[in-house]
Image 1: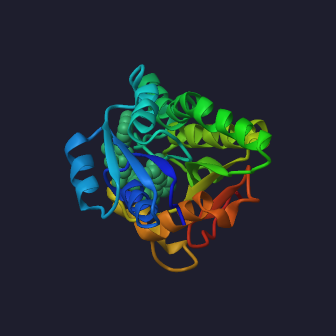
Image 2 (image 1 turned 90 degrees about the vertical axis):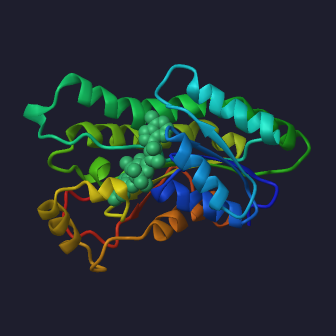
Length: 256
Ligand SMILES: NC(=O)c1ccc[n+]([C@@H]2O[C@H](COP(=O)([O-])OP(=O)(O)OC[C@H]3O[C@@H](n4cnc5c(N)ncnc54)[C@H](O)[C@@H]3O)[C@@H](O)[C@H]2O)c1
C-alpha cells in the first residue's frame, strides 16, 4: 500500500502515533518517527519491522519542525505523507486556565502542524508540478489529528478544544490551497482512544465519556491508526478537506 513512500509521523513514540508508524511501515513506507521522548521513540522504532528513522526533539521549539522535515529528506530523499499527531493535554475549567496553559495547547496542536506543513511545502508542491508537467498525478497525503473536543467542545478543555478546532481550519484551508498539487489534506477527530493521554482523564469523566459511545467501549490505538491509514492510502485519493470522526459513535452533542 505504501511502497516507495516516505512518511513523517509526529508523536510516534507511543499511543496513536506509534500504531500509525507501525501500520505505515508494515505497508512498505519509510517512516520518520518524531517525538520529544527520545528513548521511547528509539524503542518504538526498534520494535517496528520496517524502515524507520527517529527524529528526537520538542516540536514546539524554534527550528525543530524544519529540522524534522530535513531529517526525512536527508534520510529518504522525498516526502509523501505527513501525519501531525503529537500532542498532550493541560485540562482545567476556563476560569482556572492561565495564559501559559492556553498558549501551550495552541503551540503543540495548531502552530506545530502549521510549521511542519510549511517546512514540508516545497517537498510536497514542487514534485507535483514536475509530475503534472509529465502528465502524471501522484497523490500525497496530510493527516492532522484533531479531537471531538475541537469539533463538539468538551468541558474542562477550552484550551485543547480551541487548538483542536484551529487545526480543523488549517486542514480545510490547506485542502483548498494544495488540491491543485494533488495533496489530500484531511483531519481525524478521535473520541476516546486507550492511550497514556486518555488514561489521565479523571475516572468519573472517563466513565461518562465511555458510556456515551455507541459501540460501548473506547477505541484501540490500532483502530485509531486504521482511520489515519485510510487517509494516507490510495483509498482516499478523492477525499480532501474532511474531518473523519473516529469515536465509536458518540451520542452527545454539540453535533460535529
Ligand atoms: N487518546 C485519545 O482519546 C485522543 C482523543 C482525541 C485526540 N487525541 C489526539 O491524538 C494524538 C495522539 O495522542 P495519544 O492519545 O496517542 O497520546 P500519547 O500521550 O500516547 O502520545 C502522544 C505523543 O506525542 C508526543 N509529544 C507530545 N508533545 C510533543 C512535542 N512537543 N514534540 C514532539 N512530540 C511530542 C509524546 O511524547 C507522546 O509520545 C494527540 O494529538 C491527541 O490530542 C487523542
